[in-house]
Image (cartoon, rainbow, N blue to C red; front, side, top):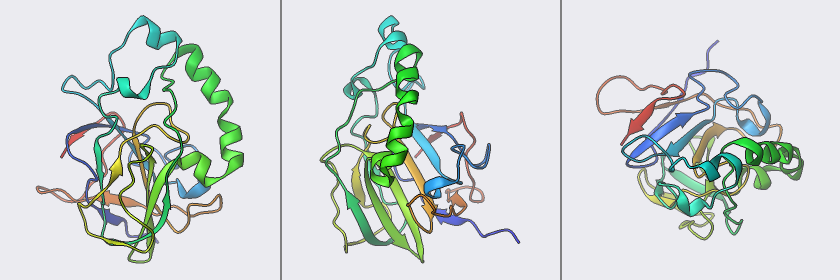
Length: 209
């Protein structure tokens, strides 16, 4: 029996590039751990579709998160509900997009996974909505605007796009699950749109809201 997908609104405005979409593969992030089976990543991009300029330095070295077009863009609540987890204060570390820099970051990923959900998600907010948990992760340090126990409406500002946790460049990780701990079970999601049926964009697609 197929599980009914959980319907969300897009949690941002502007142009965003889709990465690691469950419409392209499941589990979308290569593992079901931490409830990520149907998670999706959105990378903010400029009008040319790039997250940041490509330079020789970006191929071989890390880059400051402030060099990216979407660093600090508002992140909005995709569902109404109660905020049940708020974690802030993790540093926005350097971005590692390619070459030796990305290889080094990949090698250190295992240590972040062993450290648990907070090390993986970075600064994050979890909203309980209709019995499910909606996670918005990798938020900018110091940007979270909500508190645990607070009720939020769809479209309410939650925080800003950052590069905290297990993140190679500023982006938003969004998932629905029954838990964000290692044994969490992912729940399929879809996004509402003004024209057409709810959908899940493919990896490589640019969406605009």
